[in-house]
Length: 211
Ligand SMILES: C[S@@+](CC[C@H](N)C(=O)[O-])C[C@H]1O[C@@H](n2cnc3c(N)ncnc32)[C@H](O)[C@@H]1O
Image (cartoon, rainbow, N blue to C red):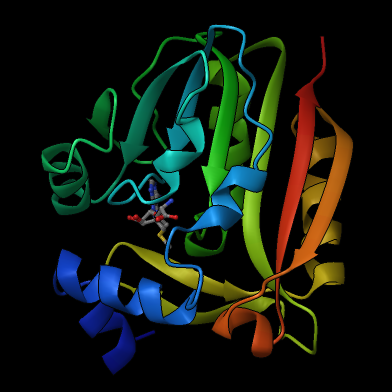
């Protein structure tokens, strides 16, 4: 699948990416939606996977956590680091996390699940790096209305899935069962943004790694 014009603009520079992200989430300029993510505050070691330029990393503000911010896109990570948005920046793929087994208390994937083609490999790696009973949180945008539940676009370093609430939940339920997680909680909020007008819903799935 060839990258579309939108995809090419989005990944041509961090500025284009941030501008587009600002437009689709307008008027949530402070990106308050990320504060809905249930980040622990107990000195946990947290992996933020798919941190991008660090716009989602604001969820950790004021929390007593130690954070490693990882993304496959080195330009995005370098920019986020320059902007002092990231705690411990690392460039790596979700398919081959360069961390020890049982290393993290929590893994959070913010707005990145719909960019990852191989969800099986994502779950396999997240299970590996999480401690027993570790928390795995996926925060993403799904479509309230009809969605193809398929890859709809090809990005320079990822893909875009368009998933309906039902399609997303079915996918997560199957992946959780196959890769040793129990789904503990699902929350949904209609986005009060342009994305929301288009039918976008913020969905948060909290899973626990089985012992
Ligand atoms: C929509 S951006 C979200 C970035 C950030 N979390 C935010 O909300 O601002 C999706 C991110 O997923 C990253 N990504 C895509 N495929 C990836 C992979 N296989 N491994 C790690 N990161 C990936 C992209 O580089 C991009 O930064």
